[in-house]
Amino acid sequence: MLIREGGGIAICALHGGETVELRGSLEWTQWMKRVRNLSDNTIRTFASSMDRFWQWSLANPVGEDENFTLYLARYREDLLKGFVLEETHEDERFPEPVTVPVLVSRPMTKQTVNREIAGIRSFFTFSEEDDLLYDHRYINYLYERHKSRRSLLAGMQVRKGRRALEHSGARKTFLAPYRKSRSTADVRYFPPKLFDELLAIAEPRERLIYLLCGACSARIGQALNLTLYDIDYEKERVWLLDPKGDEFPDIPWAPRIPRRRWLLEEYNIDMDGDGMHNTPDLQFKYPIPLDREALYWINEEKYRPLFFETLPQYQRSGAFLPESLRHPRHPFLFVTRSGKRVHARETLSRFKRHLQILVDRGLADPDIRKLGLHSLRHMFGHSMAELYAATGNESLVWITQRAMGHASLDSTLVYFRLSEETRRRMVGEAHRKIMSEGGEGR
Image (cartoon, rainbow, N blue to C red; front, side, top):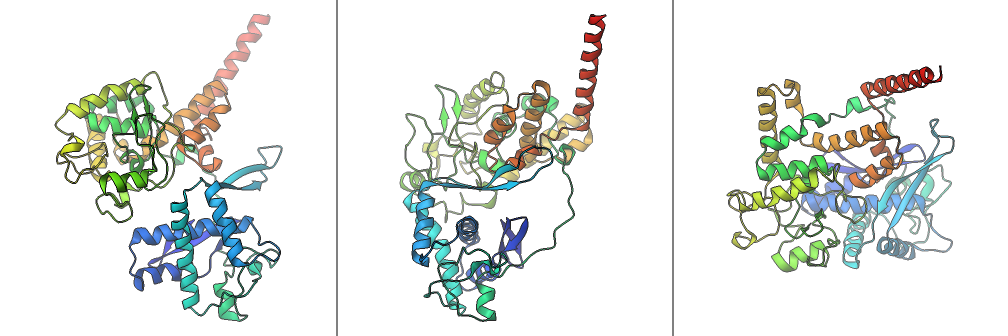
């Protein structure tokens, strides 16, 4: 996990019930900014690469007689294949220990793997410039973990001394916060009963965005990265792909090459360096759904047809500019009248205006104006939990995790800690059922 601190980024991880920090990561990111003069996006990308490598190393000790080069080669092979890191936890709610994924790394192309290694190389370049020696065989990695296991820099030995030991990854334990159970009351979701009203007052472009966020659980940055080539009109399916990733939609007529490469070759868009397409609010961050597949709809019969009915309305409106008329040309669906990308800030502004209309019409409480666009995604999770409460179908938990793109089941279970209102309703319904059956017996 990446934590911004002091003008840099600290790399931290939860491991064995402890929070540990990669020693030197904060100084490294500051060095990249001040000495190497790298962009914030590049620094964040490199830090994410090092974070992934570090977490992998926690679960993969160095092998016997395995030097650092071979250790890194093994990691590179795992990046190509993809891997899942899991941890097992005791939970009093379950009779057996629960194993949950803590990191899911999807298979990467060789080009992407090279970029990952570049980030790791940067960290070791900084370490070398800071007087670290790396041409020996071993280091006792678990200076961090009670000196009982070895990993991360296990294939390289640092000269023995205080300075070297600190930069080799000396464990830093943070003060653990007080535990606070989180319920659905802490998650501010858009009221499902008002979702249709919101869609009715929205212009076609915003209606499409609200459908992606509310009916499909997309984050706003993900929704705004939808392209004209991610929509399967024949099967009525929609795909959301990371523009910096290596995937492509499973649509016969769509370009079947990695998204990043397609944008570069077809549109001359460098997703790392292009300022128009690489702003913070357009970052994709995580896959959705969790596997490479089309989006899930919270109500297939209702919202999916509405999306495909609204799509031509938007494309025929004055708010839409065809791809061929855009300068510079790009394939993203949501644009302004001049053909530039729509950003999250202007979408949020329109969303707030629509919330005010709901309040003015007496349909919503004034507090609804405090909600942001992410409340639509929360509405999806809440609605799936309510569906689970009504049906008892446990597969809905797994489906929700896949649909929302949660690598960790814990993120999904936040929605399934049912609200007090739902719990009371379920108790009442169960009581009425028991009383009814008892009456029939008499």
